[in-house]
Length: 253
Image 1 (cartoon, one colour):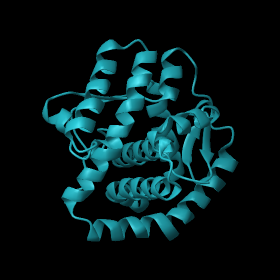
Image 2 (cartoon, rainbow, N blue to C red):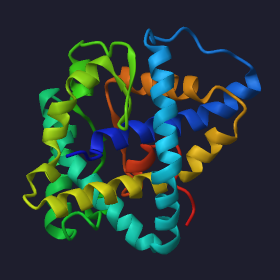
Image 3 (cartoon, helix red, strand yellow):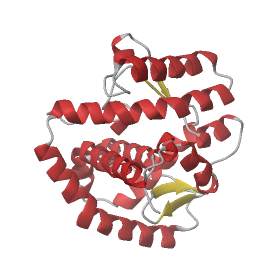
């Protein structure tokens, strides 16, 4: 059974948003990026073309239709729900990194939003001023000195690194949606999360598509820059922050 987990959505959204911001600056300056850790470039470019074709044929049209028919308030609630699930995994990883305050914040966010925010649909914690510290297992390994390794594009799942690809099964099993017994419900939530995230990225992807530059290189460099940081993201924003992680603001409703 194939699904799109939160890990991929976070990877793709960070890469698209960060690359979109970078496009204009580099285009104006004419500066070239430095050498990238991309020994699998030929394979990666082919896989990227496949993923983009799949996105153009399936995910993007569905995301555009979803954005047209779904009220902004409902989309915010969906984003809140999935971001809240991510806070649980962030708590574990902040704890593994021995980061007390971020771990506490993640735990408080998850408990408050789950109990008082209708299962996470309402982001009560952000209204209380509790910061979000997003972390995953790859960032935890990076915190303890494990390098990202070369850039690697996975079929369907998109941008990754050798390090992150090796731990992909662990990341997937950590997704709380895997605990849902009903296949129909679980798959429906995976699809909803993927479509909602893609709808949040429509503007950022348009920026990249319209730039007369090598989109693959920008996506790769932006993604690798984010993953190399290792320390994750901090934001006081709510729902939509899951889409761009502070790199691009959400598209106006």
